[in-house]
Length: 60
Image (cartoon, rainbow, N blue to C red; front, side, top):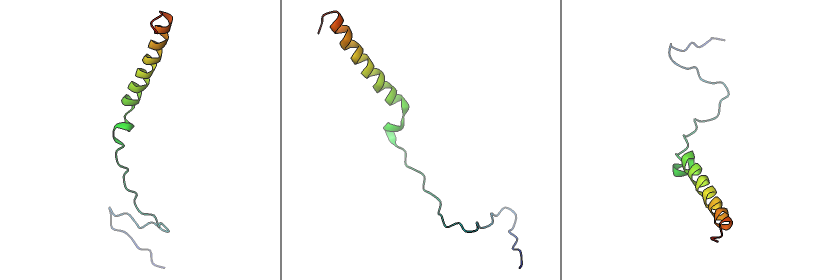
């Protein structure tokens, strides 16, 4: 059986590979940015803390 040689710089074909190259996933936009989630969590924590402070000092 003859051995096929590939020219330099070329990748030999993969044996038994039936998969195709996957497409790159699209950017998730606003929801993939951790700063947005951090800001929402901090804002929520401040609202809850403000509620308890208002109850303590008799404003609510």
